[in-house]
Length: 595
Image (tube, rainbow, N blue to C red):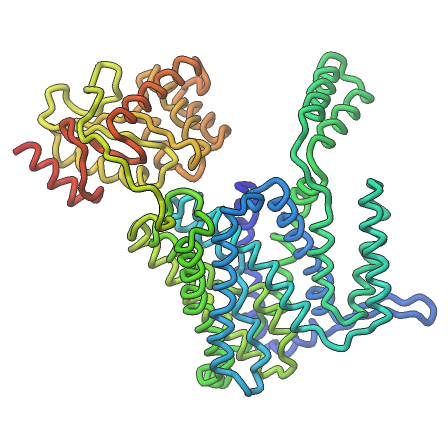
């Protein structure tokens, strides 16, 4: 999932550049050439047989099939070995995705029922994953990993439903002959998979033929991308394949010959499913090339005074903008509350409603699929222009709302949990393990106030608190700060590794330098990043791991005995701090303790 996030987030800048270029081109003195270029025919001919599409349809019907094929691969993997296996975890984002489609469509239809734009109700239903994840990258640690997982699951369900809507409601003039040919070709592909014949050329040839037959049938060929993606084999690496790969690599290391090198490479490759190998190869092409070309071909809308004036009073533009900016928030929040209320499922991590509200707002950024449906829903160029202006306006408003919510209300509201969740246990309020010589202490030994924090280097709340604590210690030089480890393994996969590296730095007397580096770089805590930080401080990152693990475990045991259940938890002069974690609240608490 982290690799997926990196690819999608990285492509956001390229997608924005392509969108801006399309708009500049369409509004330049050479704006007429924009439509002329994308309507240039391109095809193949063999004797009297000819197959031709204009450039825009090659992009929308051809390249975008690869984009949806990658989505199909992701769906197949998540359903088979990923998060979508757990019905309790997928129930909430599934209903949230439904709500996030029904409400925007209803708002749009209420404004356009009976009018020339009535068929465009499908435009505001979809979320643009790349843009949404790009904004979450800017938000940073205020958007915790469980929220990203929730939004990614929601986006996958959203994509599936959007493709079904395209196939059912935006398909016209079906050709029975071509549809029959497509069904036969799909059956051949399924048969090859059932017979376990894994010859790439056969699948490529049949896939291209199936795409052509689907295009001729009247069904949008991108549906085939999703179908073929879900058919690609996916499996978790078996112990046998992993063992065989390890043996082959060991044999090559002992005797590095070309034959053993080939055998080692094949053994390692076979340990990973075809689905995941294809995702690794196709994600960069899809994210950095196909989607930006799609934006370049479709986002070129004229923004002159006449177009903007028409859009300002157009029910099509207003319906799309309101559907994205308002409908998505209302639909996703209602779709999240309902299954939690009825105890149909749970959310990953301890998400609060403020975080869900920010995620719902960001989900209103609809671009790729929205533009895609505009081309299918409207034939009138004027209505298409108004719809595209509505998409841009609604997406910009959603991005701004999401950013503001994450800035101002990201930690507000209670934890999102079913109503029958077990009540909180009665927790101790006194520190069970007094401060001792082995603790990490910043401040004077004879301090008038001692603040003990149980923290996690990957916890966004702890990251926010680190800056507050630094300012607090500047205000009160007579106070001292003690840090103890409490990594939340289930929520933060890199927390333990970060704690180990901090202990390795402590052996060299550089714990607090590493402490500050880790909190300054919370989004970058994989093993390579941690090794790099250790090298910067001239520390051996993974030295004496067993001893450091015992130290971390001792901190955790002391925390549990003190009633610590989450991070950050503070004790001021041995008493649990029950107030806010902002600077003003902690300043008052320190002054009261000094008094």
